[in-house]
Structures are given as C-alpha cells and as structure tokens.
Image 1 (cartoon, helix red, strand yellow):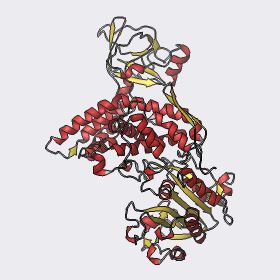
Image 2 (cartoon, rainbow, N blue to C red; image 1 turned 60 degrees about the horizontal axis):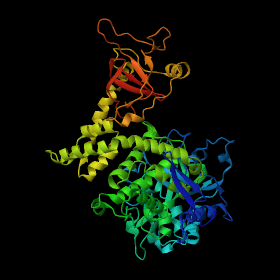
Image 3 (cartoon, helix red, strand yellow; image 1 turned 90 degrees about the vertical axis):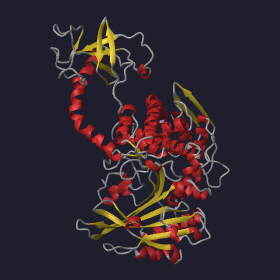
Image 4 (cartoon, rainbow, N blue to C red; image 1 turned 180 degrees about the vertical axis):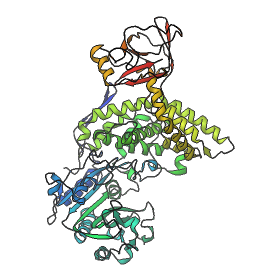
Length: 615
C-alpha cells in the first residue's frame, strides 16, 4: 500500500455503460492525511505491531450470503461470529486466527440498524461506511486492547490526548460495573474524562442469550480547550464517538444471569470516515476527500451550484440542494458495493432496500439538483476510482454495476416525473384541506402502487412540504392489500379468463424458446405511450396451462366462442408497448388488433423476458 498517489483516468460512456481506465486509487497529495493513508496507517499499525502482530483478514462481502439473520454486513464483527460463538469449522481459515485487523464494508439501511431515513438531513449519517477494526480471539484482553487503542490514536495518528474522553459500563441492577476497564483508562486520562454510562451505551449483547460484555468507547472533542464531559453521548456533532472496544467476557444465560466465558475476545470498531474528518480538520465526513470528488462529479453532471454544506432551514431555502448532494453521494457508494458483492435491486428483502436507496437518490438528483436521465450510473467510475485500489471487486464488477444501476434508473425515471407531479398535486390538496398538516395514507399508497414511490420517500417529500404522513392509514391500506393478495394472485393467473390458468411456468417458457424459437419481447416502447408501434408481429398464441392436448397451452389459430363471440387468449408479440407488471407498478391495459380482431388486454405479465398480453 502506498501513502499518497495520483491518478490518470479516462471517463467515457459507451452504449449507456460508463467505463473507467484506472491506474490506481486517488488520494489528494496536498492533504497530510488523505483517506487512503488513514486506512493504511491503521492496518499497518496492527499488522506490524512488534508484540501483537495481527493478521490482515480482508473485509467480508457487504452481502452476507451465509448469514440469514442479516440484510447487510453492518459491523466488522459479523464475519467473526463463528469464533465468538465457538461454532467455527476447524477447516475454515478463520479457525486459526488469534488476532485480526481490517477495514470492513458496512451498510446500515433496513433492518434493526437503519440510517437510511437520516442520510442527507445532517452531515454525519451514512448508509455505507467503513469500519476499521482489530480483534483478539482468546488472546489479549482489556489492558492490551486499551493500550493498543491509546497508542494508535495518540502516537500513530497524533491526536491530542487532551481532546479524548473514555466511557465505560457503569453497572446496573443485573450487571456489575466494569471497574477493571475504568482503572486501566485512569492511567491515561483524568477521572473527569473517564465517564460511566448504562448498558444502552456501554454493554454489548449479541441477543437475548449468548456472548456479551461491557465495552469502552473513545470520544473526541472537535473543539478542544474546554471540559466537554457533559457532551459525551449527548448527540452533539462536536463531541463524537470514534472507537468502540467490546470485551466479550460473559455468556448471557436463559435465566438472565452471566457466566464468564472460558475464552474471552475483543471486538473493536472505529468509524473510518469520522477518523478521516478529524485528521483532515473538517467538521463533517462529507467535507473529506472521501466525498468531495463525488460532489465535484455530481456538480459536473448536473450543473448545480457547488456543495456548500448547509442543513436545515438554510438548505431548505435553496431547495434542499446540499441534502441532494449528500444523498446522491452516499447512495451511489452503497449501491456500488452492494451490487459488486452480489445483491441486485428487486421487490424483496435486501433487493427492495437497494431499490429504495436508488429511487431516493434518483429523485433527489432529478428534483433537487436538476440532473438528467442516466446521471446516477455515470457516478460509478468515480466510486471505483476512489475505492477500487483497496476493494478490487469494484474494478472487476464495474461494468455490471453500471448496467444494473442504469437499468433501474431508466425504469424509475419513466414514472418519477409523473409521480413528482402527482405528489405535488396531492400535497397541495392536503395543504388546502381541513387537516393541512397531514398527507393522506391513501395517497401515499396510490403513489406506491402506481408510481413505485417507496413510502419513506413519500414521507420525506411530505416533511419538506411541512406535512406529516398518516403512516397508520398507509399501513392499513397495505394490510388490506395483503389480505387480498392470495385471491389477487389467483385472478392474475387467470388473467380475467373465468378460471383458466394463464400463468406461464418453466414448461411454457422452454417450449417458446426451444420449440417455437420465440425470442424475448422487445418492450423498449413501454415508456412511450403516445408513440404508435410499428413492425409488430404475433409470435405465439397461448390458451392457458392444460387447455391443449399436450397440456402446454400453445396453438396456431383460435376461434371465438360460437355463442358469445369471445375467447380469452394470451398473445406474445415480437415487440410491445405495454408495461408488464413489475416493481410494484401495475400493468398497462388497452387493446391489440390482430387480423381485424380486437383483443381487449386485461393483464400483462413478463416471464423470462417474454411479455404475455392476456385478454
């Protein structure tokens, strides 16, 4: 690893995919502590320590494919859980670790740890961040961990000891105070800067039962020259927690009692972005070289005025422009790392979290920064340039990441402008109503189902208008929808066919591809509702599963019912202007004329890229 490097790059767009020719990751040479040097110094300190050398064990993917309890890796300790629990397979590389260090990729968006709603509103929340950490597995414990942390901060990074505070677990009715940790800290700090706190701040538990223990937190006073003890753990941005040292000392039993563990561990985590802001002597993580190159690229792509760091009323006066900068820069990092580690935006689980993150960023880019379609995907090369030197998967997966983001951006952009207009109309109506402070839950549900607006995005937009979303009513509407979902699913399968099963499964899609040689439908025109479709061809007719002798359901010709003159069919065309149901958005309806016969389309579904029009 080098301390400071410069980069030459070529940033181009071909076929809608942004590409980057990369020499190495950047750091700003003028800075004493560019971000790469901060990370490297931390890792080198522990890796090369003369008495306690640590193994560099790379960050786990931010998508924990082998841990169903997590949406995303949200702390450095996640990948080490088998060691803490004593369940590690002896054949696994983890098993031989005694000490480890790394910088862990983390996402806190969705689930128990969720910072998504706060990103942009202030200057310190993130959905993606790095956690610098060192770990001891049955090796050193409290004294050594505190000594290592103190020397790392004051000697390696040169932080002023007079600005440091330590908090420890002060005990409660169920658990004794951690006087051992307190006494170790008193060797370094005066008693007025070694502070007791309760379990909410200074006692870590993995769950209701299992490994647990007290922790010590190290806090830094950005201002200095004062007694800031009363500002520790008080949510002031000028006195911030920078490092947490957890001592996994006990096992919480079923009856609530604590049993001391035979092998005791140390789990630490320090916010990389926070430490970098301190070393670069700025008040916000967003003012460091972690984010400033992204802001410069955003300004270049959007033409917006430069980022000025405003929040609250000052930012409101400029249409929340700086909030837009922070949201877009934070969210592109989250998406780049999540997609490169194997997650994709979708309608379920972590995929839906990513879709919400992307749509939130696109909305801010379009509405608050004046961005054009495709701007968000063009930020990927800048993230790769900044982070790819330490996280090489970003480099190898850059094309895929850009493609996925661009496709999602294009999909949402097709409805976002109409959605914003609809929201503004609904908000104006709410402000003029008898309850001018409430945004209707029914209207939020309408935006969700018809325009793909996640409810948290609608809630945020309502707050900007001085409105409070009626979340209870929204949840009632969603519950009503859930109760009807099973019947609705049956209706969709029937496609208005009076009970026929019009769904296609593997048997049907395989028959289309291998027997009928039908290609995926070109549905690029689905966003062009006012443009006539030309050169359209009927490729297949589908009567439904079990409706033909072979059970597959495809026929060459059809004859309407002799009495009613009607027949329910599924039409597969080479190209289509219909929007198939997807992403929380309902399908289009209309008519298709085939050989003089008009088919009234009542359902449009997509199966493996083939669009089925049922009517």
